[in-house]
Length: 318
Image 1 (cartoon, rainbow, N blue to C red):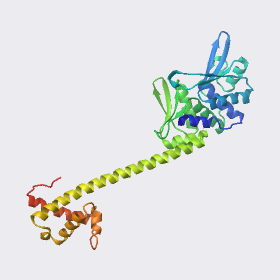
Image 2: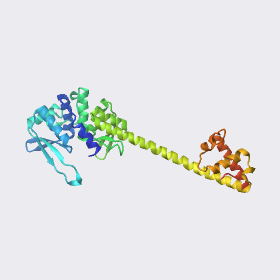
Image 3: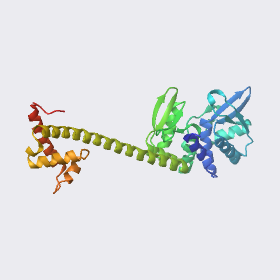
Image 4: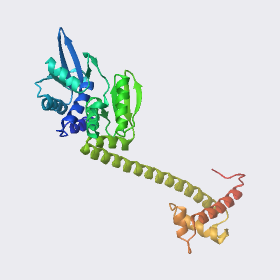
């Protein structure tokens, strides 16, 4: 099961008994999961979803609000390994008229005058707004697995719908960007913290814990990798510098002998030969009293200049 499906399964199981909240949630399903079918002189409404728990929730809401008799069917889809689709069918015209008008989905001119947007008259409280946003996400939303990246989106066929939902999300405190993509208009979030906040707002508490746990682990792994890369780079620099220093010391030892060097440089040269892998800081601690890293580096620069002069070089080697 994908992370997005897990989130939706959790949201679809949130207990709601307040009838105004149920109406608000159903209003989203009518706008984003339903199809009105006209055949001869009859009209029917089909609500479709691939999520079993959401299908059960829609049936529960219809029965709770209208004591509606509905037909539920499962349509197998063998193409591209897609999931089965659950279809909830309403055929009684008077019931359809009531269901659709109660949410403002149809206007005074009947089923041919549908409203793609949601009127504030049906979202009078914070809980009704929350229910409508939850229903919209359950209908069309998706969220990526946080292991792979941070992305939550609502795709809409009509720009009017996208802008309307964007408005309601802003009212709830969430600012989503809207962009066209192929035949859709997409509202999306890419900030991990905002995605977590929106999931929590809709009521997906367990999914938020999973999301945050993955987010923390990714952050820790990222920090560890950066630290390892930093240490590796430092080690590489230390090894390269040590190799050059030992090369200079070996040259001086062969040409003039270390005893001919000033005492402070001769002591450092012998310590480097005894500790080829030590950093400048570690070499400095071997002196009594200890010498700073910059002090050690300064002495190595003098050793390098002596070796360079003896080689007859006109410039420092790389």
